[in-house]
Image (cartoon, rainbow, N blue to C red; front, side, top):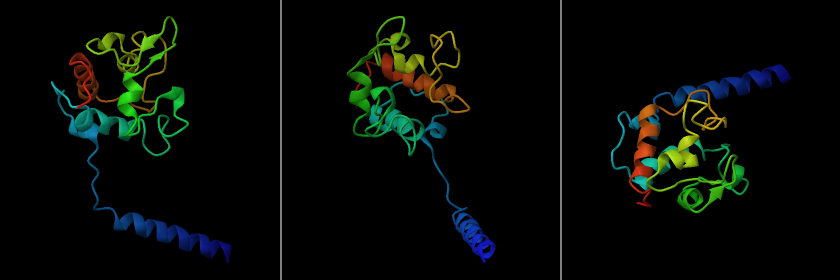
Amino acid sequence: MRRAAGLLAASACLAAIAACSDLSIDLAIGRIATPIANPSFSRDIQPILAETCASSGACHSGANARNGLNLDRDSAYSSLSDSAVAFKPAARLRVNPNFPDSSLFYVLLSDTGASRLTYFRMPLTRFPLPPPVVETIRNWINNGAPDN
């Protein structure tokens, strides 16, 4: 009886997945094929953060966001721009407008350990963000990290 119920539940799940097979997902990281020279925070940067850092079950969402960095839609800009983080060797701004190489947010996106000051690459996924996405974030910081 239990086995039959389990098979029925598994069949229902497979049917539900098959019914959704024509859905397509247009992820922000997939839409940026070439770096955006003048990115907007709300149109270009925030969707990346929402999908990779603050999505359901991600590290930087909600009241218990890791390291106090809440990247949910309503909190992301202020969380990135209003604080320094006490990482060794010295405290660094999460985002230092006009200076991506001294912005912890940008540095931790690097695919090279030496660039990240030996900290883990973000996001903590199998693959790093695509280079055009990282370059778009760099451009946003280079442009003064505006809240636009």
